[in-house]
Image (cartoon, rainbow, N blue to C red; front, side, top):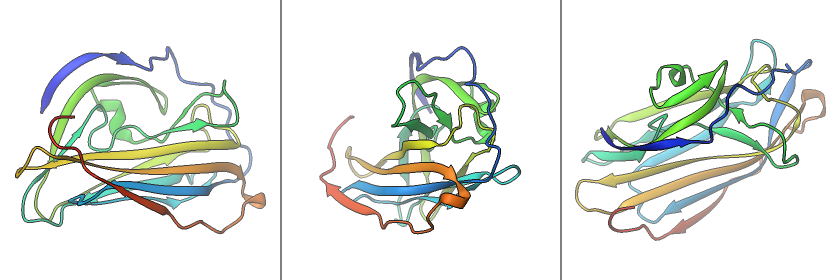
Length: 207
């Protein structure tokens, strides 16, 4: 359901330069944090299920939400619903372009402007999607060896899900954040730190 339309944000005129990684690289997770409202009614899972980046084998982020309740839940979001557009933002270089974790659905989203495998801008809209009782919604997002703007370095990325139920006006939120490094696979460590988790009170009323 479309409930509002405002303006375009983060607009870029064209995709960042494409400079393919010449050797296998790995997306190494340095830190993962989960921040979730108390009594969050769904199971929101975000995992890098493949961290190798080489020609023909992109790294892959899987994002899913499962409704374990007997009632429908409503996702509140914007362009790229249900989970939005994941960007990798460099933290070791102010001028480096962002990298889009790509899903083919972005090309057909009327609220997104894309070029190659990059999202250039997103229309600010308020959208909703229903997650029925017992339903799971899952999307995967890929980081290619020739993704526009990709380069070795340190990045941050995150996914946020906002939900409400039919019994109240309370909106619940869960966010997963990562600090990651893209580095040659031969240099990468295999260990992955456990996610830290914090819980906060949910917000009643409109958000």
